Image 1: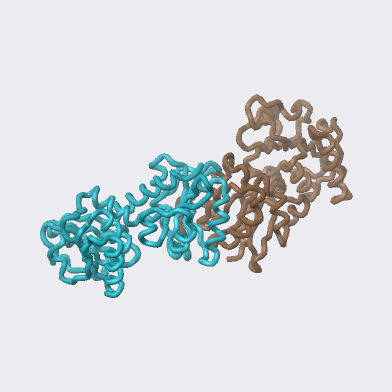
Image 2 (image 1 turned 135 degrees about the vertical axis):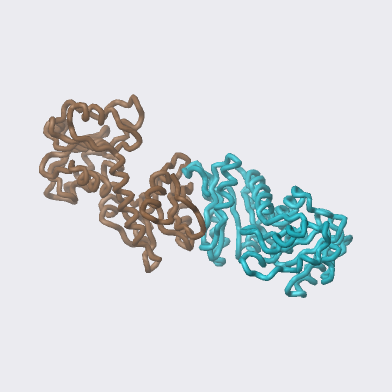
Length: 267
Length: 267
């Protein structure tokens, strides 16, 4: 769960969060660093939003800093500190990964959407020529929607508990990708080639399902971003013979992309 | 070598150093934390002396900070930042251990001397009624000299490559402890009850011995603070039947005392 050793030669990747107690990311990142042969360590640090900019400035001066990982509530503030932004960060307005470039300036990028698209492609469930239904328009859903549009998806239906947020996301998508058909049509599941759960429903046993899987066509695929467990939605779709991908591959692809980004850090 | 897990619930003890690459302290502290049932992690951070005060101020605001460990070259600067100092820090002018108290102020202490005396006492080699010969008057030697005086040693002979430093240390000891007999007499080994190597000689195989062990009386004890290996000096004294203690117990006792100090940190 942690790097095989920790010493003064270890490069640090602090993950800044507030509150910090619930952060479990070291269990994902540190084995991935070790598997990549990197003597790096992801270290959770609890940083109050009011201290965020000053803490980042001070960490920039730590000799063995490799980069930063940002989580709630720092992703928008991180975006504001970066002199350079990657394409997903520009699209979404948030940054979850920072590095210092050779000129001493911060570069930032987000990898939620890239991680999703890479994983969907690797598992053969990314379809750009059939309708995609995205359930959930929060942070993850927004990142996935933009990444799908960037990947060439032509018809996207966004369903969200708060319909207004779904409408807003569709408007943003249409503005950024004028050729996309993006709407919030409720009855769209029946024609979907890919359905995505981007809500937190399914994280806990007994959660209601985010949508009725019986409405999906038999040749559709399900991508459920819940990584902590196999959800009831996944089980129901698998029982119907649908192709099913869980959240773990999305995390794996995101971490791989983040490692590549941090490796680009100035020595 | 490291805590059994690392998560957002883990309390951090950064060790600040410059340069940081050579720091191996996590291999000592993290198993000790785990053995004490503490979800703490010692994390090396490379901090330039010019950034030291600002970094400490920023770390003070990190929510999951348990305390700080200071090493070269920060021990005197750490002393200057503490609102409260323990007895060894007051005696020596250096701090290697800091915590934040309930009033938000830093407390600092050093534990080199305490670690030595606790280990010597635990191994039955601390003698206060016979002469003690201390070879080496650097940082470790100075801490040990003051701790021996505080423990009640009445006759202390200090030998150092630079004789002037030994003279200075003896003068400081006599000022702080007017009843002590402290001098730099060279021929003192023959009457010693305890001889101490507080130099770095013996750290590497082939180093010359810091003194000739044949000059020690048969009922004397040797304490060699080198912890990384069993030194030639230790082997020669053991071969003569002297009681011998190496540097590892000193570290163990120091770490135990530091843990107790950090546990006194404000929640």
